[in-house]
Amino acid sequence: MDKAGVKMLGVIGDPISHSLSPVMHQFILSREQLPYQYQAFRIKPAQLAVALCSLKKQNFSGINVTLPHKQAVIPLLDKIATEAKAVGAVNTILFQKHGIIGFNTDVKGFLNALGDWKTNLRGERAVVLGAGGSARAVIYALIQCGIGSITIFNRTLKSAETLVCQLQSCTAFDNFSACRFDEKVLQETIFDSTIIINATSLGLFPNIEQNPLSDQFRFPESMLVFDLIYNPLETSLLRNAKAQGVRIKNGLEMLIYQGVESLKIWTGSDIDVHNYLEELKLILKQGIERDGTTSLSHSG
Ligand code: NDP
Image (cartoon, rainbow, N blue to C red; front, side, top):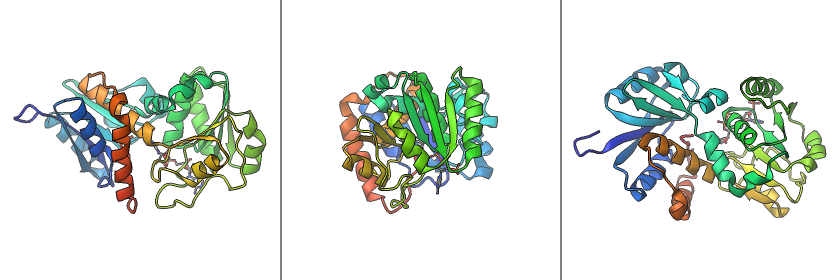
């Protein structure tokens, strides 16, 4: 806490200069009239342990952790929440008098971004493209929704198989299949699925022409196509799906809701962004369009 009674929050990562987190968190804190200040810190991997101690000493209430520290930070923590343990990554840290606790808010961020669609997922089939950190959070969230089965397609089969093994061992769910990415196989099986989630970085700025699926790929009419990418706001994948009349969603609301969950952990307040969600989305969209020529990092 500084002299004026303002408590401190922040995000650490490298690179960090174009993170949307300071703008997003400061906007929510001001709307909620919470006396906190949120800053970004560029921390290189070799500085991680020292930075954590220093922020704790300076009485920071908590921080977000972004690339490349989401896994590396785990051994430096005193306690790790269930979701973070299952996902194997921490994006939120709470500094307490007697220890440092790690959380993963991407799971709740994704669930909240799904909104009413969650109720359509019980017993259904989901397809996840990718097997990295965000795919783990998404898969863990789908299991919480009561999904019936999950097929993971990934360029590297081994990563998808490892992910399945790890999630099987920490959840009661075992209706997974892991496949090496093959569009033909995916096209033949997609018509049984209710949702497809792109959790690869294909299409992420600046490689906006990339698309995990070809222009010829056909989506079932009743499906939701969810791309975790929010820069650009409309990827080639989403553009193609929209042109076929399929419901689409980008990663912007997930970004917002994972941030809200971090704020709830730090402040203990019950934050509801509902009343100003559209205004916040507009501010973030302007940030993405303005900084569109540089990379943006999310704190989640
Ligand atoms: P990771 O680096 O952990 O995983 C990347 C995934 O993309 C891997 O499955 C990788 O496959 C695949 N991939 C990368 N390049 C290629 C390629 N050329 N061809 C095929 N597959 C490829 O990243 P994250 O999981 O952290 O992030 C993935 C995406 O999700 C990013 O775009 C990120 O911006 C977004 N994201 C959005 C969030 C939000 O709040 N909206 C939150 C978190 C992430 P392989 O295993 O073969 O390498």
